Image (cartoon, rainbow, N blue to C red; front, side, top):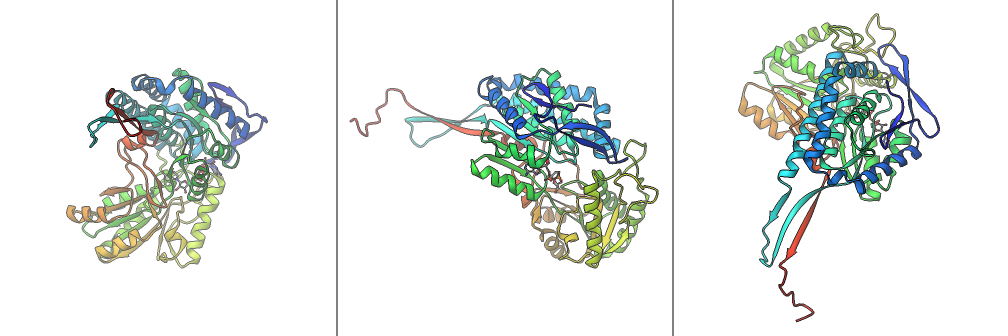
Length: 491
Ligand code: NAD
């Protein structure tokens, strides 16, 4: 396990020597210590990224040259996949098969953006037809510059990949800060980039708190672009900090995503996708389908099946075989989710199952998967993100009512609909005010497709070609025919 900051191609302790603890959420044991970056460390990282961008030529390399580094990082991740996944489990708590999936996805993300970097070489210029034939014009794409990337703890390596891979592909240089509770795999990413021979300063990883290291990144005048995934309040702070010097900004924030199930749906399939939508990663998923709306004809039957299956979920340390629900990521997160369940109960909700620490789990941040019914529409449980394995389920009667309930949220990250009637499913999909819509499933995420939210769920899109655009500027180059006279002042 690594413990130092990775700045300008070198491993270094924090300027003031401070560290913070790494806690295994399954055991509550302190398993490691990691450097807590200061503003001084961040300044060195940003200056290294600046130099790598402005002087050392990273943006001047061809896309194909940059792609070689990205592919080498992908190879490196795959070569150590199981080991890295294990680190993710002891850091984040998620079950090993999920971590293994994430790590493979992270490698795939580097490969995907290597492909897009190569395409930048093939298709670098777009000619523009101008009305005035004395001029010719073209638009070219260029990297924005130094990107400051700040990520959350729910998909530690994958969120790093979603930002670092497109940024490097575009020709940006990066300073990345992982979440303080899950920094282990981001440091492995730095080690893999180093092994791949990535030039010094192109990727810098500074571990530490949001209020010190994160704040220093967002306040730094030499950072051109801020890419953030995390909570709404921190997203607002980042946008405000970006406003001061007009930094480019992309935000992936929270959600309270609905899942509408019509009464022609297969009940077991619906239950399977509802569970996948809310219990995968202990429900600590921004796009988690946490508000389930079920048409009244099948509501009782579906609820009974959901409760029956939810009670069967095997809870335990993510490293144990067969475990499908690990602990929450931290003591703080556990306390917050338990408080949200208590508040829901106080507001009138009924706990159909779960809602407490599972029996026999006195240590570790464990919580039973929880189904809430009778959740008042105005309560926080229905409106605010809980970010835990807690689903609110409600009956509806008509399609119009379902759409109205689904869209009645300040968030708009994801939504899902299930019906055997394809025309209806498409109609509902287009009525959802959300950036990601699933039909007959919930949560499968693809590197090739755009990811991001409407309304307070964020700004911009990650993944796919949209993810690359996040790190590119558009430049117009217009040429006046040599030898032509303009003739305004000098006739
Ligand atoms: P958070 O906003 O507290 O922290 C996210 C990151 O921001 C961390 O690295 C943290 O250190 C940093 N940070 C905190 N204060 C900062 C500051 N003042 N300046 C700069 N950086 C600062 O969120 P979290 O608790 O890590 O994650 C949970 C939240 O993230 C949930 O609300 C969830 O919806 C959201 N999330 C969204 C997505 C998405 O794709 N939209 C993905 C994962 C998580």
